[in-house]
Length: 99
Image (cartoon, rainbow, N blue to C red; front, top):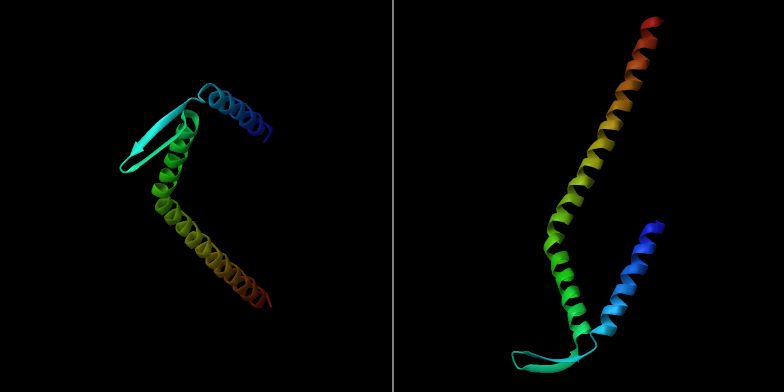
């Protein structure tokens, strides 16, 4: 857990240094829009947009795996219940046989 905090701190330092060194304003033109922003902000926004895109693309598969896991857990509970019933029935019948 501590290693993640250290890695996050190092990554934060790299991002801060990157933002300071790339603070020069650039003009962005897209279709009919035009605006100025620092290069660092634009690169960070592009990275965030890529992360959102990857999340959206991977979401259906993740939801499918989660549903499969839920179905398998439900099946396990059903089978454990049947096993408990059979075990109880077997112990009851073996007690009756001994009598």
